[in-house]
Length: 258
Ligand SMILES: [Zn+2]
Image (cartoon, rainbow, N blue to C red; front, side, top):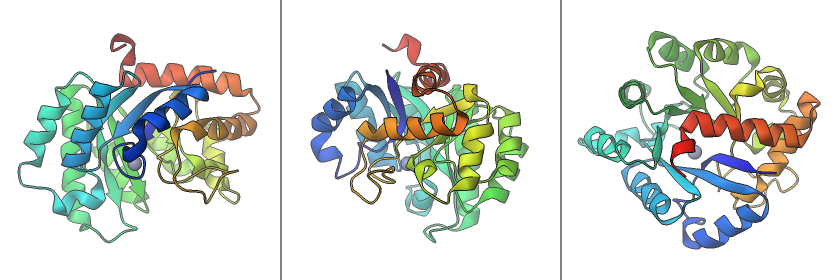
């Protein structure tokens, strides 16, 4: 069985200091491709360097909502340059985060719209982070012309997922779908079209059950997330592996990148 971890942070410590070990451990569990996602300019650059050094790795470049107020004036030009790199397969992560008080909502919204503009202009999908910002996320997505993107680490109930899926967006699940009492998220994982579903660890964060609480999380734990979603949908883990791998290859355009 093969899997793709569509969102991990091998570009930050403690994973960055032991990249080779993390990639080898992932390969032993069948995770043979990973998308390493930038949260600011330096970590986007590191993601690209990792993608140049390792054939299993692809990069995404963007400014995380929590990092928007710290971004330099020329951030957009820098990100545009990075997006022209063939192994940069997505714009992000971007989005809205009203949980942490790191950047004002108005600043986050401007950056989010700018990232969606870049996704449309480059044809590379957006990777979107949403924490406690359901209403504004849905509003901004419905107002914007971009239709290609993934909501990573899905946190919300079905009524929020529905309009985003209708617009054409994908949804990916982390270890939080394995957590007890996360019924609203499990309901979305069970109901949504399998053709739009992808897997991710968001490592080093959010270690899935049965390793919950252990840090750091790593791409090698993807099968635990796949097993939970297979159980929720009453299909085999092989079905989940096959379909989510296919979805991810098409979504990020990996077929021509080797
Ligand atoms: Zn992330």
